[in-house]
Length: 143
Image 1 (spheres, one colour):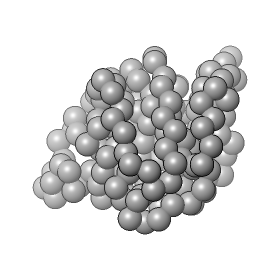
Image 2 (spheres, rainbow, N blue to C red; image 1 turned 30 degrees about the vertical axis):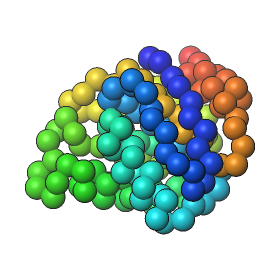
Image 3 (tube, rainbow, N blue to C red; image 1 turned 60 degrees about the vertical axis):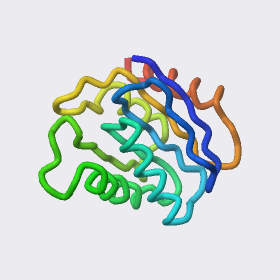
């Protein structure tokens, strides 16, 4: 499984996620953001190919609904096709290492095999090396 990192300062313009194809995302929320920007990020995730979104950190529980609504907005209000349905989980009461472990070993889409994880770090500080190292360590945490 491949892993990539995107640092996303709050209210920033949203970048391309590249050629990830369908992917899992882990949103790491260093701080809360405005509802409007959260909705834009949620729609961006869905349109970019995210099919399993996990979120951890500041006020993370609201992201579950935000991405669900974005999925409905993008796919339509009728039945969402199985291969476009975005799974969502929020991880408010656990360490980030457990969320990273969950992303690597437990988060499976019911119809699409997802081979790429995009960690999206929302906050003022780029923490790429520390975050990728923490993800790598979490993958061996329960061996």
